[in-house]
Length: 512
Image (cartoon, rainbow, N blue to C red; front, side, top):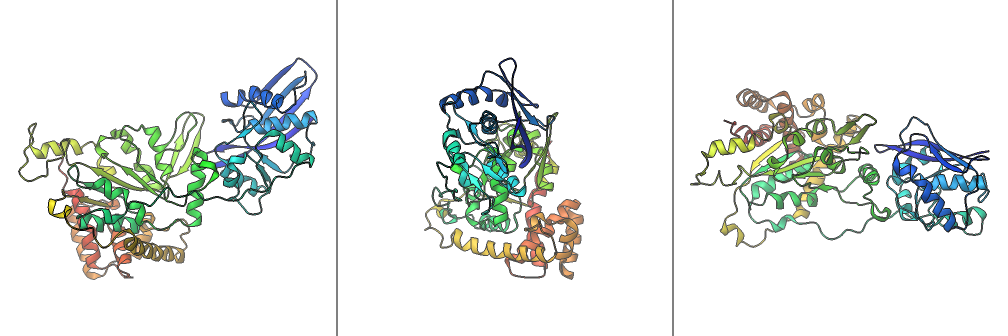
């Protein structure tokens, strides 16, 4: 007789159904696992054997065959331990044969029979709920699974013995409750920054429309401080955004104790990060920093120090909002609708724009051009706001803290975001909530300028040689400026300010 247990295999953040088939038959004593299993799955034989012995059971002296169907789907990870063990226990008669019907099972086994946490419980719970299944998962992941649905039956045992007792009716497990991660502390506040009023204004615009931002300036000007305070002025997560973020974090194994975080992601990889670390990939095609920053901020400090090929790998996700990882045995799509914020020095020494400074190696303009040539033109064309951040003077530092902080700016940003959400909902664009993600045909409709603005952008587009992408990004920024002002119409003043942020990028020196 063949016992069947349902589990899942992960393809990105999607959980595909896998049928674990267990047969115990007379023959040579063996424990075989077939079905395109990787090394971690093959090693589950010893974990299952030891966990059953620790639970007071021993494998029969027969041939045990475990098939993971469909056999042509790669199986990776340690979460197959628990379904295999339960299938063996059902085949041995240690638990009722029909106890596992209607459940999706995943979990890793320790040698003492305890069930340890695994990655991907939230997507597995969503898939189980869609198939009208219950879920059996580790106790440490129960709070994570509870977010999938209030009607989902969840069993979150600590050990194999506890689960067996539940099926026998001698012990009843309570349903876990959803949990929110406790915030480690207050976010850095804009009130900490003295001076840099124009940079704060640009940061507010970037937050209001989810626009990409590049800050250039000498060392110590406050570029990193500004970027680190961007999360404090972003609006709260919507339920849909929270679910999308949590599913990616679940697959990456970043949900501690099954608790979801209510904060927007802020990822700041070091400039030595590889392409696989930034956009995803590696042995098991894991999500990269760009996907982990979905619905949040990806901050690239010292942007020219990144490898040029690594930076250019962001060009496609900046446009599409998703990353397709294609490998010989994988083809996985991860969401990656992130807001890019980058900081850089004008040159390697960082002082080329300072009055009276003369580079000892070569002329300032050439030094700046060689350093900034590490960033490609197509990547810079995808950045909406480009500003120069000057050095802070001593007179700024001795001033008292500014009266306006993150709370006041966040209120204006949230109001602008709500205007955008209502507009795109009325237009039937369910997947669009910010101006930065608006399709080009729609932005031409909702950001149609007045007659004075039309003349201005026509002349500016010719003078600045704006690309089609650059033209539409200027319209998106102008639409955000109008939303911040509470104006339904994009006017000349909005376009003029949007063009000024584009002009900063066009003034960058060309490499000699």
